[in-house]
Image (cartoon, rainbow, N blue to C red; front, side):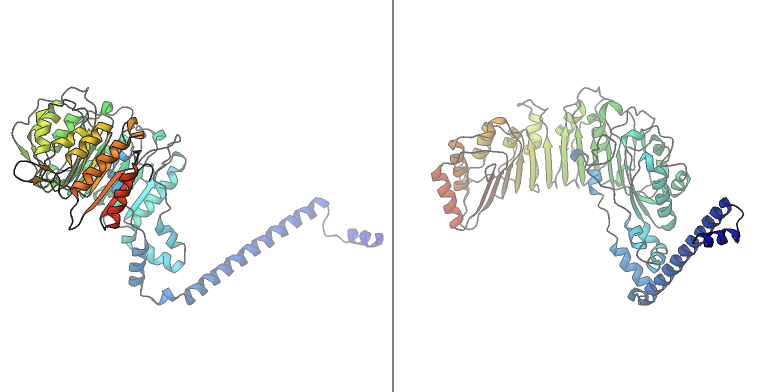
Length: 499
């Protein structure tokens, strides 16, 4: 054995051990490259086999594109207009909690096969909607995805939703990233729906280019300082139908410049009440209006200009949660809503029980109203008995408030006939209330029974009393009578904290 090793050393083609080690490393790399090449050739053959065997290759390209287009789930952007529900809450790192970031479905479908990818890339309408969370550590990646969508969508109308984290700040010098900003600006006239959460200020320098915009939602609440001139400015000829704006009260001081006449849905949150009212009265064609603002410490921006009756002939949804200011008081005094269907009324700061303007406004609500949410609950007493309301919601009730409501709903004799208040009422909801609602004695169960018993209609009766936070001590005889109602075929449902 020793002689064999000696002979091998004598006839070795390498002069030194270092040369032999270098040779072995070189051969190893060569073999690895061959293995990689073989894997690539095998993958190419398998892809070719998939294409040959795939049934989808027999489907015309136009048909497959149509199928894939409908397979892409359409994002629901309605909650982007729902600021008071805190849709955009964030964690400490500035990442969204309530809106998970999903990988664009077009990219998922394109990874199935080369044939699918080719079909998807050649179908512009499959790239007409994009929702992205822009994060500092991956802004370049987000920019690349946005560029990919803008280029593949070619010239079709485009829907864009961008969520920027707080930690980026309003002074970020880009729209998204320098690599894609110019392309964004060039394609702004294509955008039909735009949803921005905490965007950099730079965006407001280009909103005048949004000439095809039909829906827009801007959440600016967390900007530290925000006083640029004419901050909210959109083209006057844009076909804007739906507009939502949230901006912190003490940080907002700018004019609105919007195509008022085309707007049918307007949501304003944390905007000074007087400014909200001034925006509202400039939109005569509104179908939906929502205002959420409680600051009463800001001085009026200009003298009140509402003196004559103000009628909105198309307004069906009216949500009003604001403070008493000169403008808001004038609006309530003059406002008429002849086709109103749904109202959310939160006027707890209008706390004067003798405010005749509030009483008059609630008393003149139209018969078209079917759903109403009231706070304070004492305002329920101003609602006319002949209303066609089907659902009443009351928040922050006390025990006495609940008794007052139950008494109001009991039929009564007016000297000529029996009046059944709110004859179409089918549901009464008692929301979060005072601590005394944690335990109500048996007298409340009697009041509930008397109201139900007197409203019974032998030809059909349906009623739900929904009190999920209320604890009532139900007397045994009342429980028995309620059970007898159900056995007799009456549709009566009571939901309380002990249900």
